[in-house]
Length: 102
Image (cartoon, rainbow, N blue to C red; front, side):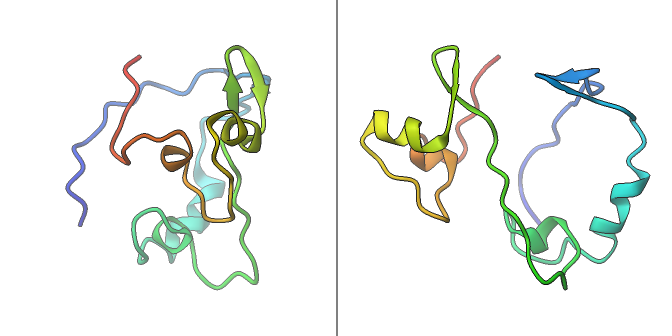
């Protein structure tokens, strides 16, 4: 059991950048968690069903100023490299529990 406090979440916006949200129904995604959630926090097995032949890691968008860039560009600007297991907070030199105030 984690000790993270509950987070208030607003309804999802109609758009995430250029991506349009087509539905608020999460039913199709329920199969991902039906047999999952048994692994460690931050792992695929911690949030999705185990047993797939392969999994993909999708990195969230990054930017330098207002310009969208790859994680490698952010790392290069900070003198760090991106490896297969690099976490964003490590790449930018922040603590794991750092949350940017909005």
